[in-house]
Length: 275
Image (cartoon, rainbow, N blue to C red; front, side):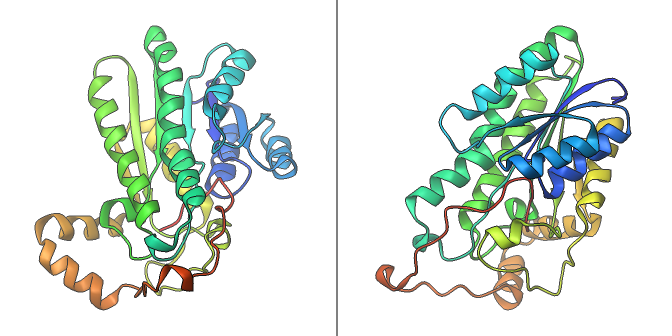
């Protein structure tokens, strides 16, 4: 898809990957709708991109439906959806509060699904459109201490693959961009900084460039960096070997008694993706 003149809704565009994508699309000539939860940061991205700002917390009931309605009312039709909003949390799955679990599922998985459900029909009627879902290598491999986050990203990948099959021949295409570690506020929000040696964090602009390339070329899946795809291949072809390597080189997560955990945060900033 040529993005020149197209209307693009970017979720989580107040920081991280989302902000970089909004600016990249605007630079390529798209009309950008900048969604974010932080009013000041979203306004700044809107100023830099020349885009219209739509505020909302996608964890709230009905927020995704409301966002779709506002976006359609603002521009009359959406040609491109980039679902970049995401929140994370680090620690043993049993230590996660119910509130945090529900927030992660709502923002990372349910919101993109609901937005697609509401925006795709218009794209199909026009015979043209593109959806980009920002996934994560965690969704393809699993990561200790990221069980719920990984599950939401795995679900998003399965949804995108199924939707792609349903939309075959309609003129609407679907991409999943799978970054590893990205230098963004995501790791501040999840409660633990990124401290692995590999993969090294990339800049949000690198992921934004990959997303723009996927849109223009209609690519179904893009890994950033490309070499991290090898981990998913090893997992698929040699699961026992993969598990041994993960146990040896992954980060250990100790499960303590439930009353021995500190209260967990309710999720971090949207607009970024982690490992």
